[in-house]
Image (cartoon, rainbow, N blue to C red; front, side):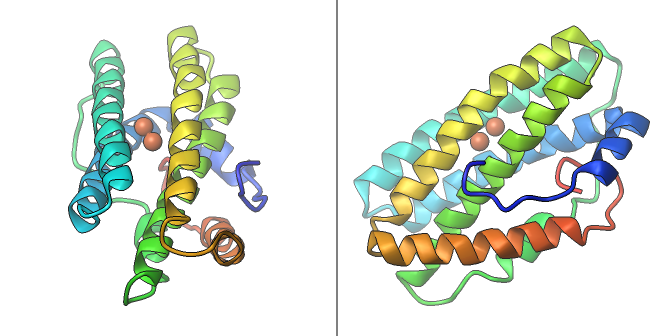
Length: 191
Ligand SMILES: [Fe+2]
Ligand SMILES: [Fe+2]
């Protein structure tokens, strides 16, 4: 699904069952980080109007998602606290090539893969979570993160020919699935 390699979610689903509130807090942090990543891409590729417009939209939407998740935390009396992040995003950052335009291709594709994986996990949460309001929120967020995935993958093609982007997307997808499968992190959105 969504240019992702398959991973086994068994361990993660048991973490969700045992500590949903921590996953929710981490989710709020992920939305904040998604806004920040999009802002940093806007700054890095300011000379490319298509990137600027798309990142502006994504920053706004991710900040909107942050508030939606914060509202759910407040309703449930879960304090929004600092949390050590999963190793997922920093492991993915290690594989970004230096030197343009390779760096742009990798940053955009990795952004797209993270959106895709979030989309997949939101789908799983929508099915798993008993709480109807929370389940509905996750079902709603799927459409938006899926659109973000498509935007990132489309923008990567501004920096390399489509066949080169496709090959690199496949390599990165294999790496991403390996990182997630090897995770020994405590409960997080991408543990
Ligand atoms: Fe989001
Ligand atoms: Fe997103």
